[in-house]
Image (cartoon, rainbow over all chains, first blue to last red; front, side):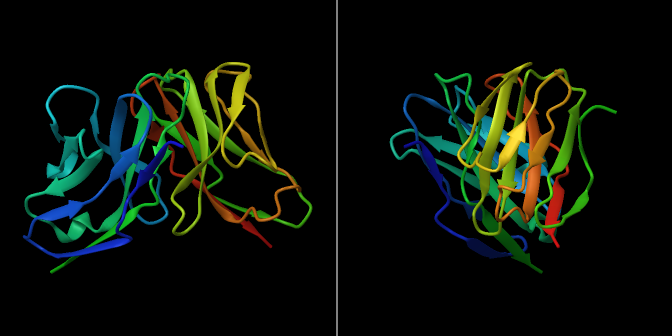
Length: 115
Length: 111
């Protein structure tokens, strides 16, 4: 079965410190990978995606993610966290060879940045 | 102002009632999706549609129905057969392989 795992329900980090939110996936074929952020009672906002090419992808608000095919991972990173980064983060995957499929989401990780 | 519009933002349903959630997009996207969000469970796919007049069931389609008569519109009906409908419902659209764009959601509560 195709799936996405976010092993941490919550990540706590101090403002100014680097942050990592973990994501691993299991799909057949090559994946398209995505990160989204959600603020309370709002829809999801797209942060970044990996389609092909450079394994390090840069996105919105200073976030980046590293694709690791051998470890089937796509961890979200930011060099210096802000209090305003506190939110719910979702990793998602779409199998490359299946155009007619929807995104498969992980269960989400709550990021809490303290001042 | 382009994007995806969901309405209403809050919706209350009585036991045994059917209710319809609206989703409209002006992004000219072919694909549209409905997800349900419950605390700690992430987003679960209810239905999706790749083209007009065609749609497929997702993982939790029981108790829900959809239609896709126009490219811009993908309404979701929560029927009385859905025994636990209280949740946050999210509509999204995309172009084929790319990222999906989401509306602001509808919070449905059974009263």
